[in-house]
Image (cartoon, rainbow, N blue to C red; front, top):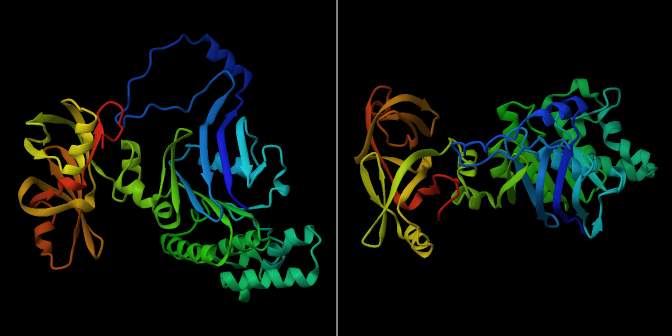
Length: 399
């Protein structure tokens, strides 16, 4: 049983005494204003220290692939290291299977970790790097050879087993690091931004390798990345974090289609979602309308029902429209193309709409490229079914 349960996990890093003294001299200040994304930062410096992870609650199922994703400093790597036992847990409970594991030494957790910088022993061959943990455990030579060969075949690195790490490419080193992890048959594999040192082409290849690997071995994966493309393509579920807090947990499609707040909406999706701020939400004849730059749009039924159920009053909202949901039209919004990025099968357009930068993704099949060149005026529209409506103050999704 390789499920992982985190209950009320909290991590605080102590701060130096001189910083504590300075902090005590500060007067209590008024609450800061709510930022544009509607989320109040919670990465706090308290008398205890810097709070890196707050109230983290998550249940990872046996053999599930879960991705922790978020910007730098959000607490995702710290959370991973607490699961591994490389960081002490300040508060809360960590269960691996049914066993409370807060105080269990890392070597006794039956967990393998793949690091960002590979951490291979430079004086050992690939084979020696992969079998090192087995030799430490005094596993028999025949078993070691069998396990190394099996892992090497799975990762297609049998031809480099006698090489030193310095003779390998970045992709090969990453395969060796993964091989060293899986050769032990751990109940959990932790990966901390393992592809961040690779170029774009290799990252794409290694994502495919990890997906294939996951199908071949029976274990639980917890993967950390700041790259939302990796999160969307690899995870059964993704955990979006900010400032030490979980923002949303769900399948990639759930998080993309129904982000719980403006932060998640803006973080997940490439190119980034377009936001229209200070949009009037009005009620006329029992129906809800939004008005964007003078154009009144009746909200779709999927928006109407929840707004009516909660008795939503007239107010200003933030409206999100994903670039892929914008299309060229005969009537709608008109703006000037300031940037045109040809991506092959699609073109990314940055359109100046009365001072707002609106990004649209337009398929190039049967498209007259002269219509989307820089400086051209473009009329576009979007399907009201696909928009997101957020509370202007809290940033929470109203639907």
